[in-house]
Image (cartoon, rainbow over all chains, first blue to last red; front, side, top):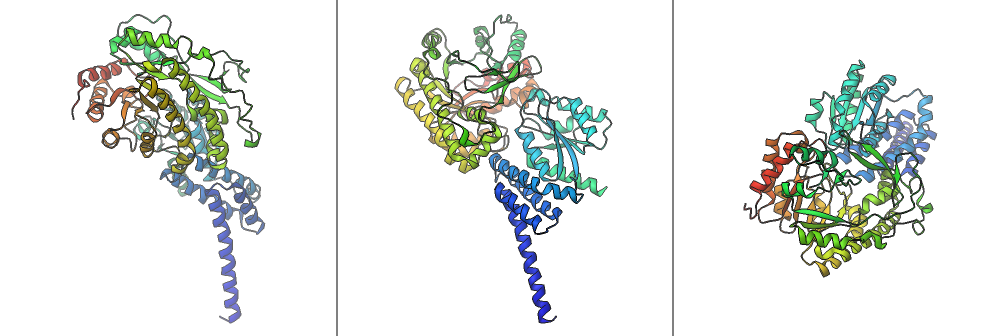
Length: 232
Length: 361
């Protein structure tokens, strides 16, 4: 290599390093919930011509880390919520560019709290991490009937249905959601259940496809599901 | 032990007791049991509450809901079996920046309204003189739950990180009122109490604490402990033997040494199947300082297992928690309609057989 070429390569390497550092900064700003910096760095990255899918990957890496840290007890509900808010604001910046580039969410999932139950924090945390994994999330809210779960799953071609319950008295209604999804003939839709009284044993007893002891686990579950779908 | 209305009616019927013609039901569908049931079950503890006072309630956004005296709109949720729960569906401080929230001029409940303690002394004295029951005071309400009811749960959680000064100011506002409610109850009936319940402050999720060590240490603990210490000071004057009970659901072992240091003497409801909440380990580490209240699992064993399993679990909890004293056994949640009466009676009968003091290890 000539001296000039060597110089050029080293310059390019420096640029690449700086750019990837920027994306690392974007990732960490989301992780710590700094929404102002996260939105600004997402904007800068696009302005510098970084491909939107790379920017999105950096953001998804943040939410992946957040879910993992939550599962390991390194962060708690408040920290996870502010991270998800930063993710949401950065996502709003990159969304038009993603759409313009034809980059779509990798799958759609339907989520809700089971009939008779108004508790929503656990369900909301799962929804945030799923969005952070580039899943389009249709949130049906609380007190959702089995029929509504099934109808929404069909309408949106959902890869997954997430069902939450806090109470022992409402948890038993999760079985009806599994039945409604199966009866609707949605063979490719997997049902995952979670919430305080729900156990792996109960999930398997009612024929659910998955069980998530917390929001981080629900995010891992859907990532595996998506990976399996892509492998098919 | 607290029973919700359908579980209460079902248990009465199972035991052949007459239908309670006028059960008093509170907002969690809990019923104060009639004495025939208390005697039949051999319950040792009952409670005293402050009276509600009339207030000008704003109109709810949805018919069927109601607005409570803190300004929280409560939605009613029907449970299978006929009972119900209420949950906050609208929070007065939601969707506002903290600069726009005027804590100074908010229409707070008046804790000093004398109607709150009308007849409380007579009620306490009557129970104290005429029954063998120990009395638990339940006067001021929860600080954390009221604060997040006012702000909305998720916004409140984010405030703890984003707006810690506001979070502390809101907690202190609420705490000031709860401290005065506790004081009103203690002044009226404190001398009859064996236990003062400083309400429920849920500190745990199913698998670990809700809050980080730093949020606990810097924001939450100082406010809660201020209330507990204030109650202890007043209680010591009128009932030096009475103990302070805290309710907290979930798994929160790492906070327990701080709770003890701040004056908590009885811990409820003891979800001993959760991670880090093993009964024997908690007894070993904290049994010299704490009495345990509750312990019988209400998420799986009471509603979904059979009477034999309930009896075995009751024996296990007695063996782990009772030696040397310090166990008030009961369900780890108010009893929901999905708990079969057979299971409740298996718990009660096992307790009477195996739970007579002195229990030795």
